[in-house]
Image 1 (cartoon, rainbow over the protein chains, first blue to last red):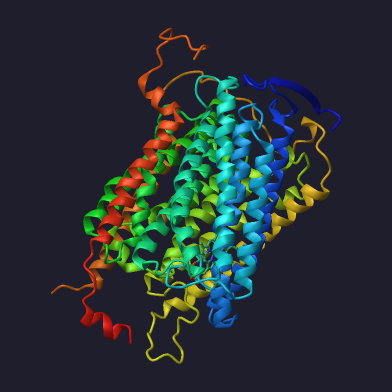
Image 2 (image 1 turned 90 degrees about the vertical axis):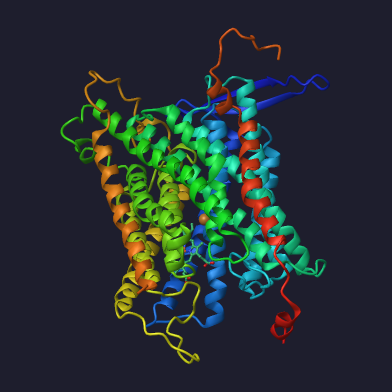
Length: 579
Length: 60
Ligand code: HEM
Ligand SMILES: [Cu+2]
């Protein structure tokens, strides 16, 4: 810690009745110049560690699932398949992602805003509740008392402690979100930032607002279900359950999107000194998320008979497209901020020199670029198509659905979170990254693995293979179905992709754990392995458009999207042949 | 309130909205609660019950 300056500041709280004095210990980061509240730093660390543990649990289950669905191996017995589908979904989608997001919210509301943490003790209460919830739910799943899968659709019933675990976790997370807003208020009152929140913090604020919507909906559905499992409530209507549960299930994914996009902007800033070429539009896009993205929850009920077409179409088309528009704005704004900065650094030749001369040796940078590509081309295209009432019917309840969200929450959010961790290790854990050589190609391996996994799941689904199904050959069943012979090829591809992704996550966890616990300490800028770029210089001359390369890439994306869109309608037409 | 200098420098209207996270939170919750939750719940609760002659055989 030789170069770390420790500062003790005394804050006189403007509280009239008490006039308490709070001693806050900051360190001033010798690499970034940020003031870091040491109490926030500890909380960021423990939440990040819990996230990594959850991811490990999730992928161990995942690889067993892959080799169960891969029929030549067909590893697990039926009940363990469903148990681990539950376990995988919960640990990956809820525990890994939300622990990491809480770490991100604390980082964004203290370090980035140069401010102190409002109530660290409460932060610990939240953390302990979340850990307790994780242990409780996971234990109930593993002893076979909660084979209900992530969605726990009624009338499937789990042991009350399973629901209680989820509720405790959610309460802990809610405390984290409230503390985030508390930190924002302190920062605003103490004027630690300029006129408006920095864009990254603004995006995290968007995530936090959506988290409030999500957690409130979660309370509405999990508390009655918990009481029902205790026998205190007679009946939970399955249609009503599904409606409200997806208000939680879908909205929670939009926390991820907002957090992920914020990190994209942050890495552009850290790696090449890039800023959004139009901040106001980027902010507007975040506001569109807040206003409209949660309505799209309705795409999970597109085949449900109880709700009307008017409700479905309003919520999944008109309203959702405003949120899709927001994603397209970000998907343009992030690469163009890289491009614009790179051009200003002098990589100005042709359409793509900015890309070929990009800092590819920086694993955070490559993670983010790959995440943008994967999220757009795989998750984004299929999201819009599967979220439309007509074309949804082709893939409903098939393995194409998990294929789609492997393209959003895994190749997008998870890869982004893994990428930013390469910055957190030196800046927050103050350790050098051990195994930089491995770190450089880990994101690529993950990208290739998940892309293969995701695309083959999507194709399998289009060919009619169901999701959450232990034995899609229906052997011994009262009926059989002859799949298109192409499925064998895609099953193999899926198994390969899943294995590559598993290996990549193992490498990442290996790097993170060795660095954080055994890595050499970072004593100053000289130990920083990843570049922190100064702000890109202003443009020398203004001629033409700032980011032509990004524009070309966007056009390619739109063409791919149109082709897929057309194909799906074609398939739909072929499904019901009208003569 | 004491620290504000009223009307000294006009903050543009869009910035006022965009920087007010309580307002955004309120709008986000309201739009979603009305269009997704309330509308959906109303539709589901207005469904006619299953006629008994269909329901009985289904429940064994
Ligand atoms: C090595 C990486 C991963 C592999 C190989 C993998 C593989 C799988 C497989 C085989 C399924 C079961 C599909 C089925 O039979 O219906 C599945 C489901 C799922 N995965 Fe993953 N996965 C990985 C990572 C992740 C991550 C990082 C997340 C979330 C952040 C995630 C979220 C989910 C969810 C939510 C489901 C659906 C569970 C359900 O149907 O209830 N996965 N995954
Ligand atoms: Cu959704």
